[in-house]
Length: 162
Image 1 (cartoon, rainbow, N blue to C red):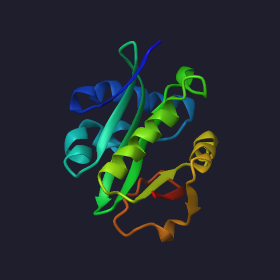
Image 2 (cartoon, rainbow, N blue to C red; image 1 turned 30 degrees about the vertical axis):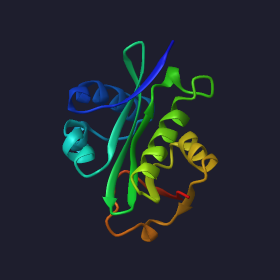
Image 3 (cartoon, rainbow, N blue to C red; image 1 turned 90 degrees about the vertical axis):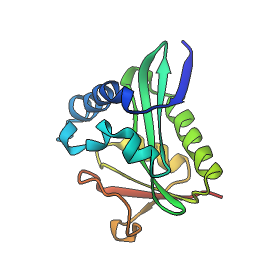
Image 4 (cartoon, rainbow, N blue to C red; image 1 turned 90 degrees about the horizontal axis):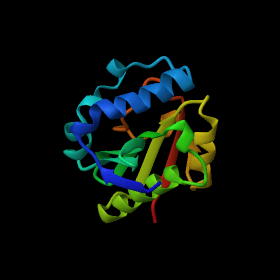
């Protein structure tokens, strides 16, 4: 099993939708649809063109994980679409960590100092993961003005990149 991470675009929309909706709807019963996430069909215009990026993690050609960066301010970005397929999670393969490290390296190279993200109360493992990586919980009202809010999110984090 060889892990490969690469920047992805619109050609991967269907695979991404399949990966993400399965996790959101079937695994965590989050009432969210593909219509609630139009960015999944417009990866290039939503992420790449604004100065962000979207990465996919592949094992033997299968998309097993994703992470995206929305650049919403000159020096600030939001993490979106951080998902790893259930059977590929955990410290053995370390896919989530590898994806986050790649995103943070991209931020450093592109002058993005502050990272924000929103998540959902039920996603406890995700919260522990972000906290282990130095993210600090912040109140919704302390988010930057231009932060791209997702309606389902109810917990927010910030990381200052040194």
